[in-house]
Length: 124
Image: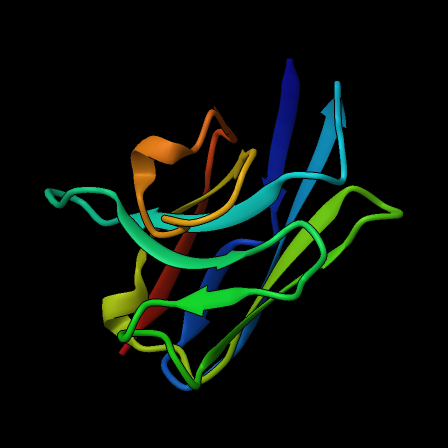
């Protein structure tokens, strides 16, 4: 089993930046893709970004493309989400998750292990 711990969330003004981290421990392997998802109050969890095991494939949702950057450091078993030009509508709990295999990176059901989430609040 893999444990995922997110950090870096907080309160920021619109236009500001935050960097989220997701540290994996336990039965870790570099051969998994990592994804970031978010869930706002009253809404379903949605895909934000994903990165393949070697960083060669990256996907973003349209709502964050050009503002967010996903990356990973396999030596540290850690993934990152750099969030710039934050908007109030980015307010949500952000979750990281991992999955084996390839394809369908945006599909929530493909991910097998999830972190507990970190709150991001963007004030207007």
